[in-house]
Amino acid sequence: MTNSAQLKSECIDVHATIEIKQLLQEAANVCQKNLDEFLLEAGILAANQALAERRRLGLDKTQWEKFLRILDRPVQSKPHLNKLLTQPSVVESTA
Image 1 (spheres, rainbow, N blue to C red):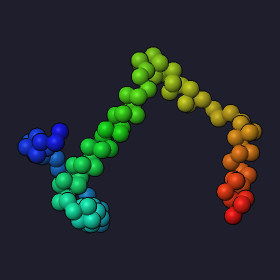
Image 2: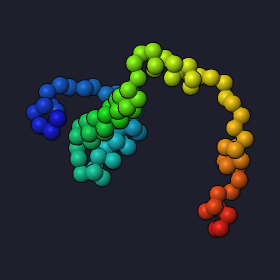
Image 3: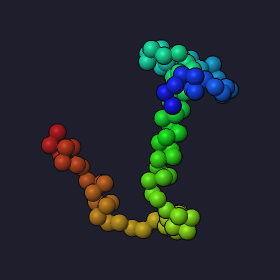
Image 4: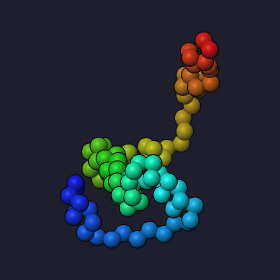
């Protein structure tokens, strides 16, 4: 989708607060892009990441539902993980 004509064949309307628009405009300026180019490239990147995360799992509907059930299970105690996360890291202990 690098063809400029393809990128500009449809219009997408976005409503934002003035603060958000100013933030986006500033970021676009820093990247030496106009606001449309900046938003479109950022949107394409976010869309590809969102879709890639779902596609990478390669699960059929039944497997996906089983995966979601596993994610929704109650939290189980993990003493070794708790110890790892509560003790200072090697980097912290040598600093």
